[in-house]
Length: 104
Image (cartoon, rainbow, N blue to C red):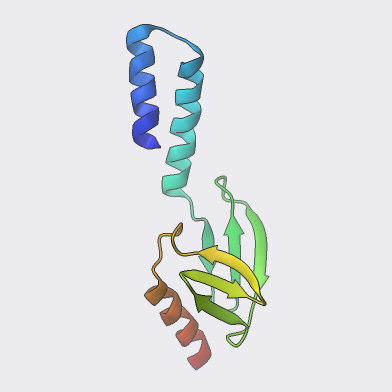
């Protein structure tokens, strides 16, 4: 998305200001926020889902026996909370975090 926004802004500089200039600026801001903000914060007893502005949208509290990790997804109480395909975390790191919380 960052590359697309830069391309759009380059084309609008060459062709002149249009509605695409605004689209390019919006895409640039959103892509920078996506690169710098966390989408989830996983702690030993809860997962906080956040938006691009850094505000917490939902908090999922759990105990180690309530969490299930299947098909690259984190499921708490039969609710899909987070897909590791979209997050910058792999399934091994999630399992390690969950195992650490069970040991403590």
